[in-house]
Image 1 (cartoon, rainbow, N blue to C red):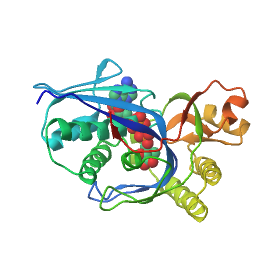
Image 2 (image 1 turned 30 degrees about the vertical axis):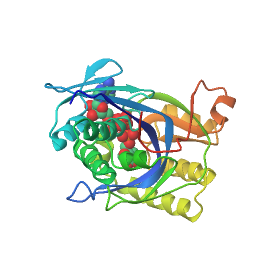
Image 3 (image 1 turned 90 degrees about the vertical axis):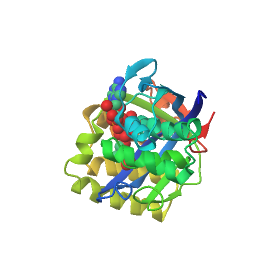
Length: 271
Ligand SMILES: Nc1ncnc2c1ncn2[C@@H]1O[C@H](COP(=O)(O)OP(=O)(O)O)[C@@H](O)[C@H]1O
Ligand SMILES: CC(C)(COP(=O)(O)O)[C@@H](O)C(=O)O
């Protein structure tokens, strides 16, 4: 049991969402849509007597990771390397939870299935208040549409069958927990409306358009984000962070200093 297991999990930006709560964390989640990213998180896990978690070489603590290890009943050293900043709407916590679930299952021979591991990681995110829909999206890849909330066997996914280059720009973090545990009626009404528009025509241009409308109606824009959205027609906000994303080259063409990646073609994978 000294095997080191490495898993890559794509980042995920949500463009629009609504919140759906239930007593069971596996049935709790969001409906909505987003993009998985070729920039993501590589999780390296090694069985250990004492549990420790590292992010980009620094000791830290990530609740959903602890939750996953507790559920599987194991202790390990988890070292994550992230292309993306944590807390800025890229689903880094979900990626760490899902990567830990896959890697621990292999390293400890837990014998769980894909769906079971997605469920463990989803429940960990929901219980920690760090996410509602990132994990199921990150397990799928592409441009996931979350039609029904929750983990397998409850949630239901579809997707936008297209790919593109993605540009993004981060000004800082937003507390996911504060937003999703606060009053979400206005946000969810806007999210349901935006999802209906996307499902009617599931294309990337419609996704960006519906996301922009959602971000404004849900009242989530910060001044920095709003300034860029006013300036660049094809840009929207990554939920939930002070982050702007766009497809193609619209941000860089407008003169912004951006990071670049692609829509990721697949879900979490062993390295
Ligand atoms: N350096 C860090 N900065 C911000 N959050 C961190 C850091 N290290 C660990 N964390 C933990 O990571 C989680 C971030 O969750 P969240 O805000 O949902 O981020 P993301 O949008 O990247 O998924 C929280 O549980 C937080 O306690
Ligand atoms: C938007 C959010 C609720 C949080 O995303 P993040 O801040 O990246 O953890 C996401 O999990 C979703 O359900 O769409």
